[in-house]
Length: 247
Image 1 (spheres, rainbow, N blue to C red):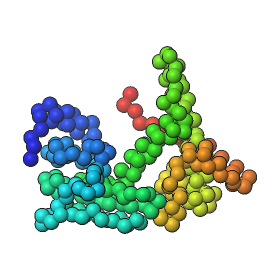
Image 2: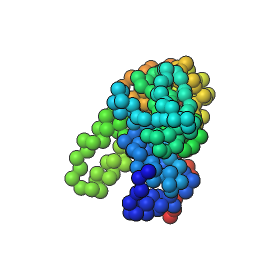
Image 3: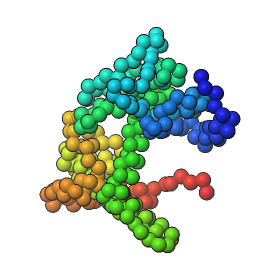
Image 4: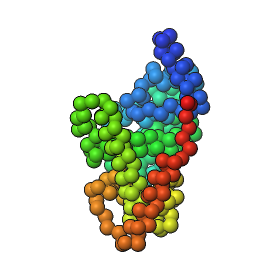
């Protein structure tokens, strides 16, 4: 086991105070042994995507008996391997998930219950999708304001436009691809929709903003009006909601 530098330990301990019982969620670039050892030493719960690296030389994982763990999964499957050792040293729970609409599986290492760890990481992927849509669909990276106050105002307006677009697009997506009844849409926008992604593979394949701006799906007037009301209601709940603050 590697022993971390004192400065790194001090930083992790301060992070532990800030996190409390909340897990640290990281992408695959952070799935390296020394960091995970430090997190284990400091008893910081984590959810980290496994970096598969070269397909001909996958990362080394062994089970409690010292046998290698094979990362084999079929589309539509979810596989759980509790108490395995990443690189032979760090004990984690491993879960693999391959949604049929995706070209590759997702493997997540966590100190939490495996399904809970996967659920948390899938929510994190929504953040990555937000960054991608703001850059590719709303062209946030092309803002060229010369003064910082104007730049901040333009970013704020862009993000507001993004949120409105997402609400409308996801409502349309849930009706067209998820086959939700229009009465289910308001709840679906604020909570996890009761849709089987394997049964409706296009339901989560496209982001709400992509559906709205690029696919230009048509709905009957009555459905379109109901979608607009549901999206506006969801946006109002977000704007007027109870936001926690330390101030």
